[in-house]
Image 1 (cartoon, rainbow, N blue to C red):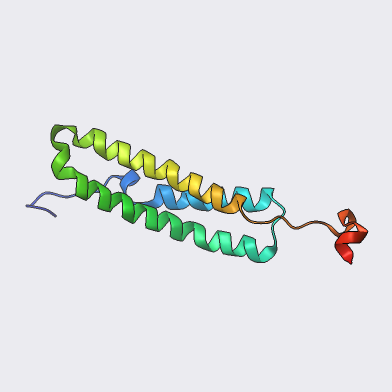
Image 2 (image 1 turned 90 degrees about the vertical axis):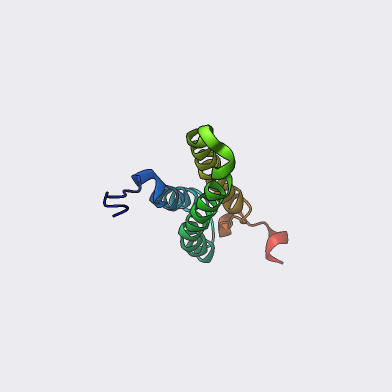
Length: 114
């Protein structure tokens, strides 16, 4: 309650969207690439933490920019949210793309073995 009235945080503002987006993208990426099992586990563990950090950064930026936004608050709020949402997913993609893929033993050459 705020001033006798219920205060409700919009569903899209609770951070669940970016956290679940990171988890879903991480699942797609780790199972579409031939990564080591350890790398898959690390990515799946770090994805929700990246989403949580991104949501905290989004809230911080919105609070920081709100006084300067004035009548354009809604535009600023949506712009910051969209940029951080897609920026976070792009960062996750970039991180997973940098992980080395494992090679099957049948594709190794004699020089790889020695």
